[in-house]
Length: 286
Length: 326
Image (cartoon, rainbow over all chains, first blue to last red; front, side, top):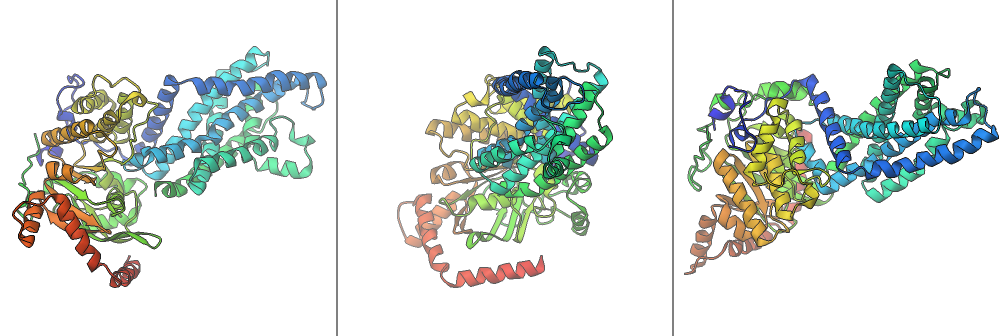
């Protein structure tokens, strides 16, 4: 016993997996404080990607709705020309909104996964690892971001196929990725916060359904803020989705945008979301 | 290299402070203090500079945990020695799981004291968690991942370096006999295989204390035996301490070095299964040795008598005191 922790940590490159138990006697060396958070984020994202690799059904089924929005709503309203878009074809105008919407849909139901993991005992097991609650939530939130990002890529490809003139500038696309991930961090934390309050999958489903469409319609995803009535403009101003769409539109289409404000709002919203969800995680552990 | 399982069950009562050498103090506090646990605990660590002074793997002192008016754990005193397999026995609702959840830092410690290898489970959560391998009651492997990925996740969250990860995960899977099935989705596993997978998840971080909450619940007899055989093999190979809850008395009798019979939130009898059975035989003057179940029925009965009206007020005042103090 006394020898195990004190033993020098000889690196074991020559181990064939599955032989012996020597590694199971040696506790791993803890990571230093600041390196813990990125390590947990990577761990959670890796799990999300592994799950997507095993089962891509969700990716396909979730691509149907944005495709229909772009195909039917987009094509029709492009012909009607009812919405002032500042010279861009309407389908181009709405494409960033639909990308943001499909990413949000994934994130806003992420809390269901947390409740499922709680019911299955997975959450408890993760909470007994050297992972502070805030790090666990941050990891989960970025995992939702990765999932949303993959969904966003699918929708961007659909939009490109439908003839939307999108940028292929890699730097701008990186910015798009960042905006999608940050917004998803916020929306998944919103979802996990509600999960921490309602504590049941069914109730969370109800809340999710109740807030997604208002969030979507009270944003600039389908129409510019300028055509909204005053009260809706006010709602739109506090809706992080609006800032995400503004950033996506500016980056993908090159329309005038307020990228500085957009990213600042998204970062602050994500941080607030993480704080709120972390503080309520204890309720799920109980 | 192997940790010697020094204690023969039954002797060296309460004075197991001997083998706790200073070099054994886990190197975790630095990492803990820099994480989200805060500075108050750091001060506390310094104040109690000899964390293993009281010896033992787990010690609970006057632990109380209540859900509303229901005192699930009601003044629990528990000492698990290093290297033993300790069985916490009791019927459903005895408070076993709640006690386990306090020890694993999942629940706060509202009153009393819980220490794991000398670390305060309320104050030094991260240090305690690094020493623990935990298998909860539910079959908790992620069905959407392969066995290997399930174990790798726990290697990652316990900071196993990338260089070591594959080998370590492989050894953990081999230790529970899942090498063949490692790359199948856990959703295709049988109940016994899921349990063994969870054992591998807990082992991958080389814990000093393995906590299993009802590990064989809902398993068929063959799977139950299989799970226990792997627990025993792992314990023999690593010398780790095992704290297990169960309500199967036969399992406790067969596999545990010592057992604590828990009823209404408190330990009502403590000893090796043999000691407890002999003790009851002497008291009853019986010729045949009673089973552990008889012992349990006996102490649960007397426990009921002890715990009449006075108990409530007693605990309430304890809790008030605890609130004032802590």
